[in-house]
Length: 213
Image (cartoon, rainbow, N blue to C red; front, side, top):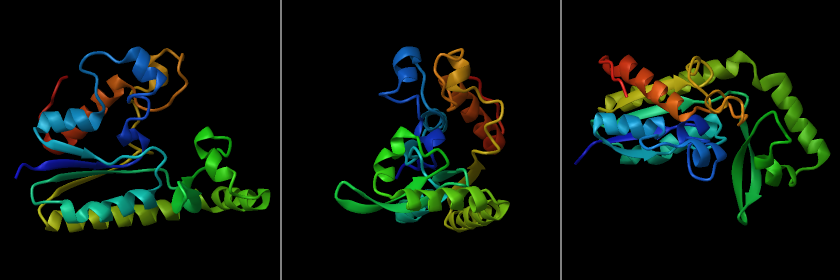
């Protein structure tokens, strides 16, 4: 059985802006441009399952790793991107089903409209105040570092190589879509060149040899 690369995380793993349907993808994509999970899978000659999801909270990422744990095999590589700790989940009705949805500071975010419409002004204020007064406390970050490190220990024991990285700390110096478009597209997500840079960073940190794309 061929081993696999599994990637979990938020929009920086899902490839926000660099996938179909985004302005940057439509106007700037060149032949060979890919998001970093694809580039890394190609470099390691592994098949890829990318389970990154835009807007994910750490709870959502953690749950998804648990959901797919039974499919991991010895020799697989599992990369988990820890997201911003101020995101947390609230229940919403979506597609006629109650689900958990991550929320974060900007209540004007269009992607959260369906969520907002299900709550009263008093409820929104409660959620916003909880985020503002509590969720940026570094104790939450310490908690998530412990949890993801625990997952790493578990996966190492079954023979997987597990890599955990933090979007808050490890994207410094990586080119953004705003950089790549000279400000035309106001998007702080990773550009195509940024995905190459980040893949290179992960590769060098974990496999040593320098790769030039």
